[in-house]
Every structure is written in C-alpha cells, then in structure tokens.
Image (cartoon, rainbow, N blue to C red; front, side):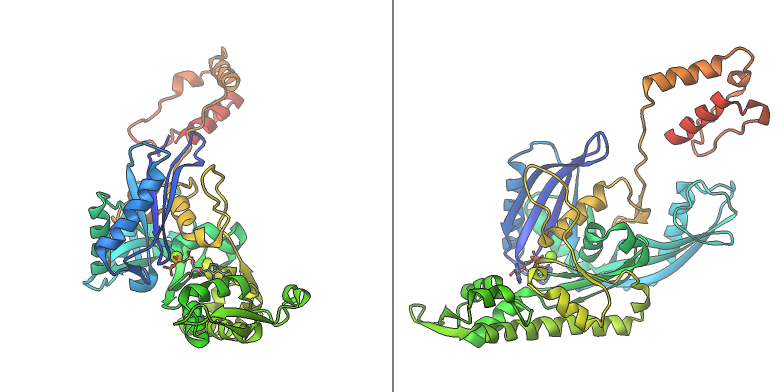
Length: 462
Ligand SMILES: Nc1ncnc2c1ncn2[C@@H]1O[C@H](COP(=O)(O)OP(=O)(O)OP(=O)(O)O)[C@@H](O)[C@H]1O
Ligand SMILES: [Mg+2]
C-alpha cells in the first residue's frame, strides 16, 4: 500500500484538505476531508500568513478527525498568478542501447539545465511534451526502448520564489512541511479531461472566485498556461455596487437568480420578473429590481472575462492545438448558460462544462466543479497512470508499476511447464538481477510455450 498523502487547495473562498492513500489495487482511498473558509488568501497569494495558517490548520484538523495515519507527504496547489511557463529541449546518449529511468532523468535534467530560469523564480514542473528516440519522433514513453540517443521537448513551469516562501511559512506555522507544489491549472486539467480531450488537446478554464486560470493541455502535457485576476467574486461586487445592496445579498442573488440565458424558461414559467433586494445602509428597506437588469450585469462581467481569455489565447499562437475544444470548470462555471455564452465567444469551438472525475468516498462529494483542483492533486499524486516529469524538487516522478500477483493455479502451471522433462530451458535461465531493465536473451530453441509465458510474467514484474 502507498504512503499517506495530504493534498491542499488554497482557494480564495475555501481551503480544502484531503488525506488519502492508494489501496492495494492502486485505487485512491480517501481517509479524511476538511473544508474551511479562506482567510489571508487572495488571488492565490498569501496576504496574511497568520490568518492563512489558521484556515489551513482548521481544514487539516477537520480532515484529521477521521484518520490518525501519519502523513508522509503534502502536496499543495499553487496559483498561476505568479508562475511563468517556458519551453526547453534536452538530449543525451544512451550508452547501453536501452533506455532506463536513468536516461529519462538525465535528459529531463539536461532540458532543465538548457532553460533560462529567471533568478527569482523556482522550478515547479518539468513536463515532457514529447520524447524522441534516434529518428522516431513523438514517443510517449521511452522506457525500455532501444536506441542510441534520447531527446526531449519539455514545458517548464516556474513560480516566484517569494510567493512560494510565503506559502511555506503559512504551512510551517501549522507544522506542515510541503513536499510538492503543483500548478492549479495542471491539476485541474488532470481531473476534468477525459482520454479523448487529453489526446486531441483542450483549453481548460478554471473560473474560481478571484481568478480565472487556463491551460492548454494535450497528450499529458501543458503547452501553455495563463491567468486573469477575475472570478465570480467580481460578479458579486458588480451586483453589490450597481444595485446598492450588501455583499452577502449580492452573492445570494447571483447564485439564486444568476443566468446568462436570454430566455430563461424556468423563470418565465414562474413569471418572476422582479425581485426584492435589501439596500446598503438600511437593510429593512427593500427595493424591487428587474431580473433582466440583474442578468445584464452578470452577463457583462462573464462575457468580458471570456473575451479576455480568448484574446490571451489568440496572442499565444497555441489555439490550433485545441481539437477537442474548451472545458470550463471551477465554482463560476455553475452559472446557468455559461456553455452557451462561451460557445458564442469562442466562435463555435466545442465547449463543455465539466466536474472532476468522481472518486467515490464516504466523506465528500467530488462531483462538483469547485472540487476540480483538489481532485487533480489526488490524481497527480496517486494515480498509477501518471507521466514522467521532474517535480518541484527536480526529482523524477516514476510511473507506478503494479506488481501483479500471479494467480496460484497459473503459477503452478508455469512451474510444471518449466520442469517438463526434455525442456532444458530451466538450466539456461539466468536472471541478471543487477540490471532489472535488461531481460536475458532466450535462444530460439528455448522459446517453448511454457517459457514464453514465464518470460511474459517476468517482464510484467519489472
Ligand atoms: N451558481 C453560481 N454562479 C456563479 N458563481 C458561483 C455559483 N456557485 C458558486 N459560485 C462561486 O464560485 C466561487 C468559488 O469557486 P471555487 O471554489 O472554484 O473558487 P476558489 O478556488 O476558492 O477561488 P480561486 O481559485 O480564485 O482562489 C465563489 O466565488 C462562488 O460565489
Ligand atoms: Mg480555485
């Protein structure tokens, strides 16, 4: 069984903490969950270490109520507001002719070495866009391939050192040591995209409370990442200022009556045209405001935000990589009609509003767009299908290789096959344990049925 992980998403609305580990089948097993309202955090940045630390501590304490397992690693999502992405390449010779994790690590480190990192920035991810083995391009996974030369093209995410240090300080106050940072947009893409969207390329837009982060994600890698300091709280502020109503009333109006659809049949049916809202200063006094006016205010802000995303995307020159279209998630994506409006703004690109892949558990419903980042952190850390990359410690993240137990009956059959009189193969087998990636060569005469099955099993173990 895997080690116990604490994953934390520090949003501007909530801090979410999840304790989880892999079970025996490498599935993600949730052990505890906690949500606490955020304080001292704005636009992904720590604005008050003491307050932020309290929110983090309370979220972790809540998650701790259902488990006492010692936490072995802590992974924290960081906002794209203080990150920069750059591309680089690396290449190395493969002295033994077979690519092992050693060469994969070497080539990624070389790509990092070749990149120019701004001095006040730290590396968060080095993600391969593609590998090349000799002349064959676009290799997804070069492990165990034969070749003389390994090349890699990478996307490097770096983050402002001071912002990371403030985060570390807020966690230290709560006696938590951060093991790894993960870019919010990267985690979000991992949690919401299906196989096809990942393969053909999608723009994932995470619309939160104070930020809208977006990444272009294709083939398991980031190709581009950007951010706008606008989120659903801006809608609330607009409503509060323009309708002269208190902030909490504006938030309720947004959630209850907010819609971007011009014909909201539901309300037509109920014949709601106007609602009564309290006024700032004297909350006993209410005023009737038309729903059309409320929706126009919401529409203007959301349309502007999506247009800003589109403009940044057009300038990036990456738009051709989005064959699977656009996927919107985050709390703001709960607004009715956001898919229709985004389809208009992005000129008929396919648009989907998505919740993260659900991890069944007895504590919390992950089938919610506001959970996209935290679920992504769990998949990043505990999914067995994860990719090679250098993490925020510049360490190679290995693929988890399942050590399948051979069913008893099958094992007995294999043994019988090997011990067959006349089958000399058992004499010839020498497992070179000093180099597990190097499988022994079998001569043609030994390629009996039983041997083939034996070697299939051996290669599965490694
Ligand atoms: N139905 C809705 N319509 C519009 N906004 C909504 C709706 N439901 C929730 N929200 C907004 O979603 C936001 C919370 O979403 P989320 O949890 O994704 O943000 P966050 O991660 O805390 O913020 P950030 O990532 O910007 O720091 C709040 O601003 C809330 O008002
Ligand atoms: Mg968020």
